[in-house]
Image (cartoon, rainbow, N blue to C red; front, top):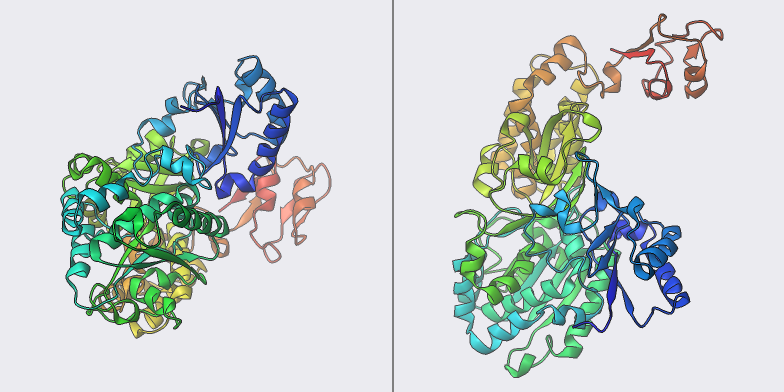
Length: 597
């Protein structure tokens, strides 16, 4: 039982921190002191609450009232009205976009109702910088259970029975992976947590480390006990300073409390974890490239076999899982494999964490049961498409994933179903696109990313991605040729089949899926020299409708290159030779006189 009559939880994830949540906390401390309430009300900085679109977020317990878009200047009113007078500040509540009703309790928000939180159950609920907050919420009970009531083989069998599959993208059975490593000859053995999350728009692993670092540490310790490892590493992006800071703090606290180090919980089992910060190479998300980087070499993949389970870090047996995979482990050990396997689908049990971003009403961090449809995630949880636009596609699996069109929105979210669409589950990036998205340019954008991130070791990836990118750039510049499409498709298939590692093998996915589902857009770019979505600048022509133009001169004033001229009160014109198609005039015109063809 908490000694406080109320708690104020302030989101301290990266998004809300950038939105002044640190200042918000300082204001709460000041206002509570002014009202003499510091002994009655506790202020807690937590990890990500999930609803990033509405941040900074503040939740008041025990009522579970969520305030959105909170600013430091709002704090005085929250304290005086809610915490002193028990009057909810309605203007800061979430408003349901359909009913237009204010929703006080965060559990009643559509964003949370269909979620099932296992990995994220503590995120937004505990102080990630205080180990006692984790322990009070059953933290490290699973480790104690494993060390005192289970032998390593029993732990592995429990993970196998749960059906947990690697959440890093490949979906390989986790228990089987642990078993391979335990049986491998050689010592010492190593546990590695892959936190090198590099997909544009993805922030699942970062948020877990920021909001519940002890859960990942506990999962790694259980895995180490299972395979017989005494040393582990977290390979995390240096671009995640808050995650690194909280992880370092958690490791120190865990050692001091006896959950890491020598003779953990008097079990005879010893285990330590080290942090290694990656320099931001996307290819180091591939396990053998990660191992090379950990060893101090250039992060480049190698052929498999041998697999890391047999010859990994320094050629010793090594088990590598990602952040989300390890974060599932304590729940499974504590609640049992049957409880985990009963959720999700038969082949894809459990839940999956996604970063739901893009042209969706409510973007943020979500955790859903496997088997839920894409439609339920995007519309039921995300609230649909912003500004009344039409849904066009969702990119699943990051830059190495694929674009899934509207007629496949009822596809279940599980490994087999998503793979059948041509996309991949990936680590959990979900980018929603509306009718204004050019699918050709989107394929070019993602391929440009993977081409730059290619390590260049194998010819298929080094040259294949370059040639595909050249074709896509040519098409978006209005120089596409009829033979480009079969050539593009053939190169994509060859790269997919012959590249050395997962980066090259999946890099063609955005190209292949957009060709499969949006081929007509490619053909319009090539044959008509038009971009149907008005995104490819080289294919746009801007003009002014003389009947609609009022001659106000605003378009001419905002044009950065002086391409618009005309007398005040009379229709203006655009010089196509000077126009850079930046569309500034289109956005500024109040009379819809600017036309884009």
